[in-house]
Amino acid sequence: MPEGGKWDKTSEFWTFTLNHTTMAILGADKSARVSTEGLLADATLLSCCDITINTYISSLAANDFVTTYYAALNTARESIASFYMEATTMADGKSLPVILYNGNIIEGPTAMQTMFKDKMPESHYEVQGYDCHVLNTHYVPQDTQSAKAETGKNMVILVIISGQVKYGDIETKLNTSRGFSETVVLVPNPAAVGNGRGKPVKDWLIQSQNFRLVH
Image 1: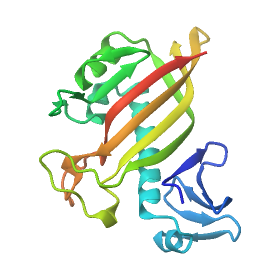
Image 2: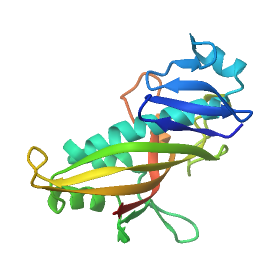
Image 3: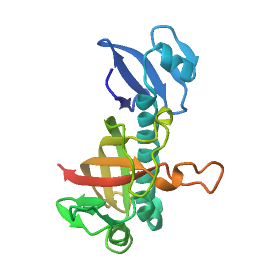
Image 4: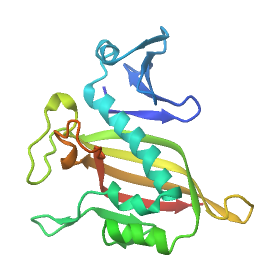
């Protein structure tokens, strides 16, 4: 069973392949369905279909990220930096997060936000499809304790996105439309672990990102 699923924009459901057959579908409303039986259920269904908690949580994380991040690029650019992990330098000297935008290295979340606010034209991003895969199930952020394994909140998640972006006046025809592809690695937000009913925070943050415009 692969750790991930694929988003189908037409049906608006995540699909999972079990034993080479599409057996289960996870909707954006966090409900689950078995396509062959038309049933609605919750996490119990995930168990009987052999869908792991990692698959379930990673799919929800990818859906939440894609929904909120591109909306921020469109209309809330002052919040862009909040989608990234805090800038840090690893023991090997490597700086995180790693941000590549169309081949250019962006020096951290604040620089990314400033670029969009001050230099980028009005834009509208439309995601047309995305996949997610779990890269690591034992991730522990520096200077923190790991979340309990059964919560699925100790993973590193790869999200691969494709879509269209329009630059310019979106309400008229005075804009340029381009395709884009983007690869993002998400890690747990240390502030969200054990947050309980405290101030809402993002559960997942960008550790690395590679955005490319395509023809």
